[in-house]
Length: 322
Ligand SMILES: *[C@@H]1O[C@H](CO)[C@@H](O)[C@H](O)[C@H]1NC(C)=O
Image (cartoon, rainbow, N blue to C red; front, side):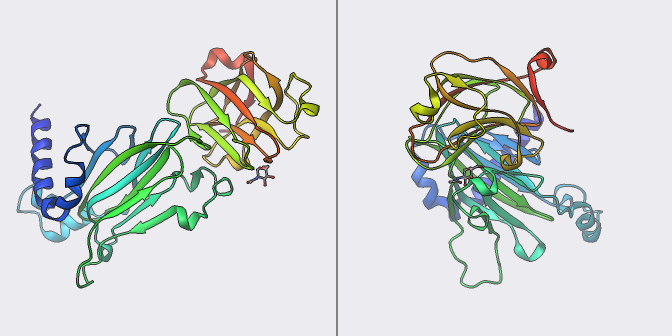
């Protein structure tokens, strides 16, 4: 209870300090009744709600006793750990981040980055080869250069291409930021990071030449609830689970890392079906379903996905190396 009070108190102090700088942008949201304030506490903080995300790091020297020397405090506090606010929305949304305030000093090794997607252990979702943007356009780094004069407006605005985005930060000594997160609906989602542990996902190419990836960060039982992929000649009006030789197909498989491009495949599905197909379990850190489309057909698949457990071992079609 005490901790909560202290936390909200320091939050108010922080917002008060940041106020003059961000007042203008704040006014934009002043009539938004859904503005929630979240304090970032974990190095890997997963967020699925809109609102304000606040981070603040102060050296112990200020927070604790005056006996600690500055050098000691600096040694204690200096870590070059990279942390992240991992944002995930509903499948048919994109993420918008407005940096309402940031105080991350470049000169002391501070750095922030917006990532169009998620990054874990050097691998990206959507995979580097699966995204229409080059990686250097997907990762935008920024920090405050206090040598610069006059100081430019301290505001930044980003939008992701899919329902997943990441705000990375490395703050070795001290710093703070306030990020405002919003979600926008889109009509033709392609790459989707699964948030729920049981759901049906609709995948479609809308007649385009494009590859769309649905990934879940857990082992999952996958089934195809309805399907229409490829032309009539290859479909024969029934479902086919061995479509590796066709260009238009639905790949089901998994990988140990985030990048689905090098995933191991369990099956290639194409054809036509309006009935629920059999379940197969993918025992990998990341379960992935990819819809590959040449643009010659209107492809659509409804994919059912649920978290797999040991009782699903008898329907396993793929077990990844650990
Ligand atoms: C889609 O994936 C296939 C197979 O992985 C690849 O050959 C093709 O170039 C990809 N198409 C696009 C538009 O990225």
